[in-house]
Length: 102
Image (tube, rainbow, N blue to C red; front, top):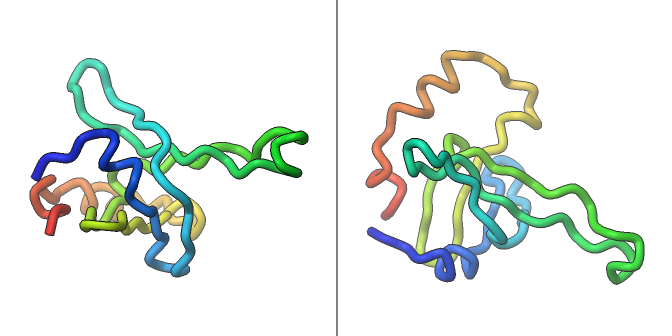
């Protein structure tokens, strides 16, 4: 299934582990050599109505996306759990992109 950038921006990003709403997709980071999406970018929340700037942007690597649904994008944020196990990273990259769209 194909999605336009505008359609991705309307999807809510949810952390599956915590059940936390992270926000909406604001931007994409992609690899120019392979034309593959590297990460979703969610801009940080405004502090004091934007007068004090924004919190830091949230980068969600593509390997952390578990499912792209009709209304939401489900992710598992490995970095917060301190998981740097290389086998986990390798295992998460072995799925096909078609498996994300259900």
